Length: 179
Image (cartoon, rainbow, N blue to C red; front, side):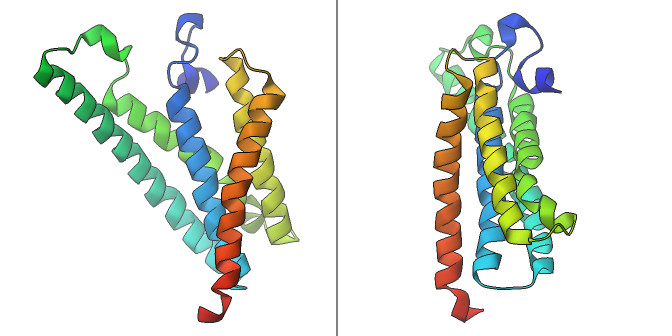
């Protein structure tokens, strides 16, 4: 599966890296935002699963389609200017980049929901742990196709992702009285 996401031979090893990282990071952040917002507002755990799954699939599809439209627009722009060369896109079609973005979003983005889906207690603290591990793992995996050290890549994505997750929790806590 990793070969499908990152490229299936040495020459293509990082071909879809941007799509995987973009989709995975956004999937983890937005799904955890739902979890943290609901937890911060002290709403029912069942709401986490309903909103989390709705977010995961709808936002994942939206990300994939946005990637498709963006890539397609870039290619159309280059053709209109007469600068598009079929070799410029590295063999990456808009459909393939859309699919990889969606897949990265859904696979990584589902991790904050695991404790809720499996009824693992304590729900929210375990969701935080799953989220942090997912950020670090996705970040560290970038080292498979880059020259950076795995712990630097993992730490960078962990810090950036957990900062975004903290914003979601704080907003949920501040808006607790509205629900």
